Amino acid sequence: MRTRIKEFRARYNMTQEELAKKVGVRRETIVFLEKGKYNPSLKLAYKVAKVLNTTIEELFIFDKDD
Image 1 (tube, rainbow, N blue to C red):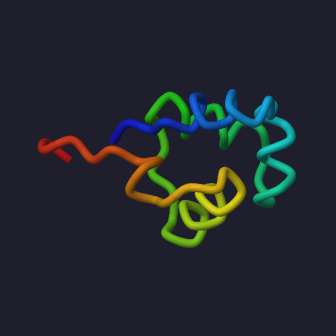
Image 2 (tube, rainbow, N blue to C red):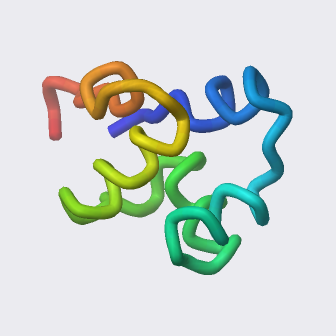
């Protein structure tokens, strides 16, 4: 799975730390999400999408192999 979290964070001039605080996780979790090394729970995906003012579908790209 790929994500567009970094792209959306840039739109809002938001650091990984700021996003992490807003969704209630550690910065490392955001790092892993951005690198595609962590698949979030539906609840976390929803929180991140809401903070970044977008949808889960816009933020997370599921590869056919996943």
